[in-house]
Length: 108
Image (tube, rainbow, N blue to C red; front, side, top):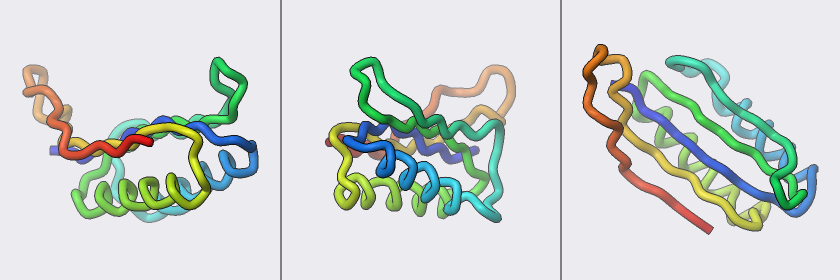
C-alpha cells in the first residue's frame, strides 16, 4: 500500500505559487517516496498562477503531514481556489490491484 497526496491550487501571485511549491519540496526531503513526484507550477487556463502536486509515500504519516501542510497553507497564503486530497493507493500490489480509496478532501 502506498499513500498519496494530490492537489491543484490557484493563487493570485506568482510569489505565493512559488512559496507553495517550495514548501512542498522542503517537506519531501528525507521522505520515502514511491514512483514519480509531480510538482508543476505554471499558469492556468485563466492566466492565474497555479501548482499541481502528486506524491506517493511509503508511510501514512508522511502523507498526513504533507496533506496537513497544504491544507493549512491554503488558508494562510491564501489560495484563490483549489483542492487537496489524500488516498490509499494500492498500485504496488500487482497488475490487478483494487482502485484507490479516497480518505479525505479539502476544497476552497
